[in-house]
Length: 301
Image 1 (tube, rainbow, N blue to C red):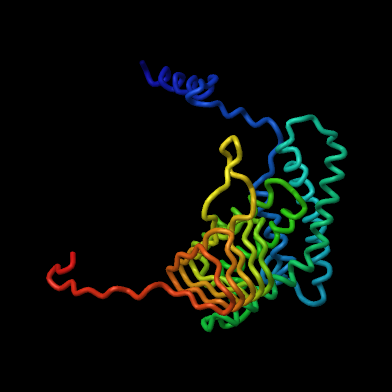
Image 2: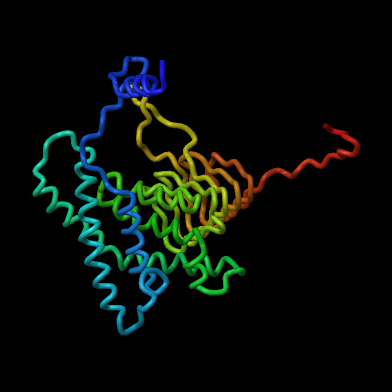
């Protein structure tokens, strides 16, 4: 068999109907949102939330109103189109596209109305990061350089879209931040004001997590599920399964908190802790003391 025939054989195997041992995933024939366009939408929102830091460097007090208005117009047009594509993504039935278009425009406008609140929350997050990091010299350094700000911004955008029951787009937006920063926050999580992540790399926050105000997480922290409840068909049921962190909780690096447990207000959890039970307010949870061994000349190995 020559190379051309081999290629044709591979194509045939990839495109023919699959048998039961290799179930067929049907070709997706409906519209799909664009990751590239959603990335541009996030950039526009960054320039609205942090004018002068992102977008045009020519923004000043006199031109701010103009620049914000232009950005909002572009954002409304781009976002309503992406919402339109998302609403048709999961719909297997024919829909009245005119009504879907109207619904998309209305949902986009509802999101725009939340931008002032998003800006306010992000301002508290920047302040919290600044107050918790002596290495930070200014708010501008945090906005420009800290990956936590990018991840939190994407999350707060995605969370508002998630609340509006817009499919797919919230997850794409948080995954864009995950790809860029290594921080994985599900858009369904509920996170209060003054949220801080120091370094942030490897932080995972599950869908049903609830985080209060003035909470700080260090790198590698996981707020995950301990186990899954399955339905009769063996599929996981979407029920609350992630931790609740009350106000003023600090969790140090590489600790995992799993299951629907509550970490009381004011609690400090040390590094490398594995925690699957609730703890009362103002607790101090530390790992057991390290065991010291003499390894001279290979002893203890």
